[in-house]
Structure formats: structure tokens, C-alpha cells
Length: 427
Image (tube, rainbow, N blue to C red):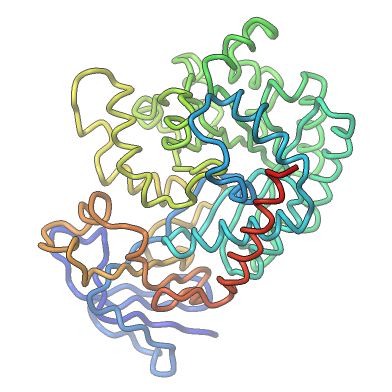
């Protein structure tokens, strides 16, 4: 049995009194948290937590990891122009190795910023799964399915085979979903096939829904219903659904989502950057809908930078009244960790508690912006930055120590992604 002991560390949720504690890890779970050194750890690997703040690892609940290759290529556009004029033409030149290196770059960025799990929907997902397995990160992966292309049915079978090959692999760090892209790229009969295949193999679904006002209006015009209500009629919400965005979800749809136990990936930076709108996060939380934070594609993969945007977007959605309690710092952090874990399908993840999976980040507090230390959670949400992540433990194993990621070649990743990203936009 492998054991790891973190000593002299402060825990983010212990305020207002922050005692120095020990965290004992056995195999891949948290076995002990307390002020006394636990018995049985004399031969354990020791990590000195002095001046460090221990937190659960953050969860990126929606991204397109390999799309990081297109970061900074197309900005300041609305969603459909961004997709049709820039992204889809560039993606036409993708090969499998591009997806591997783009995934490596995204994973490297996530680990270095304290994100220990993510949900991904994209192409060549075997390549992403290999990058996940090698790096040590945790992931819920879905092959993006587009039904308006000639090979749409083949993609469904590809997703099913991917599920059979990778689901629950890497000691359970990898889970697999099916990834129908959106109502505007997946005709009704195609979505019925996706639902049938998901029932056959036992997979849950990950889908973009109600991202833009244009999408909603077109869905009403063509299907006679709003996107989430339409998806519900097709049985999509009965399969266990992670909804990306839900920016334009109606009150009626929120009732459906809560009843069907749907989960939401809220992407504040992407929604604001693409002028998609502001999601009704406060209403979702009030109805008990799990809401995680996502970064979406071709932008930052750093959840820590999303926390303040998450709160501001929720306040703007409520209206002109400035109410910081709409999504307080503690709620934003919960979305970034525990709720995000639930959103992507991991029930025993996202908290520093005995029995939970040992995905833990130690942040270095010996920096100017961590003083004075009145409230560690406030400092984490409002003052900390991604460079403060010092040590990252995933599934009970150290994957980053003193800011250095152990299982990844940073310089090789940078060189490959620079070359491949430039090739894609030159096509």
C-alpha cells in the first residue's frame, strides 16, 4: 500500500481558524486529516506543507482540449462566425497527432494551475486519452458527434468503441461519455441514434445546449421547442446529461433540468468573449442543479482565473442590483471543485475529506498577494493566481512538485504545438 503524508499544511475550508494539519493519503484516497501525526506513516513519502494552502483540485467541466492549438487565432467574433469562418476551416486540417499534442498542452496548463480533472469533447479522442493516461490527470472524455456530415454514423460507432476501450481505465481516472455536439449540427434522427447507442453501451452524454440566442430561435423555428426541452423530448436528459453552457435556459427548462438531474458546465469567459450571453447560474444553484466551471475551447484552460468572472457574470445576470451574495466566493469555489466533479460524473471527488479521492493542490502562500492572511478562501478566489500552484497530487500520486510537472516534457510540448498550430491556420 502506497502512502503519502502532507505535514504542517493549512486547509482552505478551515476558516476562520487555520490550524496546521496532517493529510494522510493511502493509495488513491484521503485516509486521514487531523492535527496529530497519524500512526503508520513512518515509511510514507513526506511533503512539507509549511506556508502552503491545501485545497481540492479544481475541475474544468467543459473544454475542447486539443483546440488549444487555435488559441489567439480568432477572437472578438460571435459564435457562429467564429466557428464557420475560422475554427471549422482550421480544424479540417487536424490529424491525430495534432490532437495528442494539443491535449498535452491543455493538460500541462491545467496541472500547472491546479486543475486536476476535466471534461473534454473533441476529435481523435484516443489521442487525448493517451495524453491523460501519461500525464496522470483525471478526465471525462467524449468524442464530438456531428450528424450533418457523411460519416456521422461512423462517428457514433467510433464513440462506442472509444467507450469500450477507455471507460474506467487508468485506475478509474478516465471516464467516457458520448458527445453529440448540438441541435444545429445533429438532426433529430441522428440524435435518436445517439440516444439508442448510449443506452446500449451504458454511456452518459455531454452536449452543447442553449449557448446562444440565435440557437434558441432557430431551434424554436425548426423544432417547435427550445433546445433543452427538445433534447428532453428525445430522451437525451434521461441518459445522464452534462449540458455545456445553458446560457439561454428558460425557467421551464430549469425545472426539467432539475427533475432529470442534469448537470451544467458554466463557461463565463467563453460566453462573454463570444457575446453569447450570461447564464442564469443563481437560478440553477437555487434549484439544486450541479454547476461546474468550464473554460471551453481555444482560450485559457485555467479555472482559477474564472472564479471572479463567474461571480460577476452571475451578478450581471440577476440585474442592475449589485448583490455579491448571488454567488459568494465559497459558492464559486464549490463550483470549481465539488460541483464540477459531480457535473463530469465523479461522485467522490472535489472535497478535502476522508474517503474522497486524493486530488489535492498545495498553493504557495509565501507571496505578496497572500498577505495579510485574514481569510484564505477569499485570498484564493480574489487574489491568487495560477502560478501559486506548487504541488499537485492526483489519484494519490504527485504529478507536480515545486512547480515542475513530472510526467510531461514542457519544451517538447511547446515546440510541437507552435509548429502544429501555425500549420493549421496556414491551410
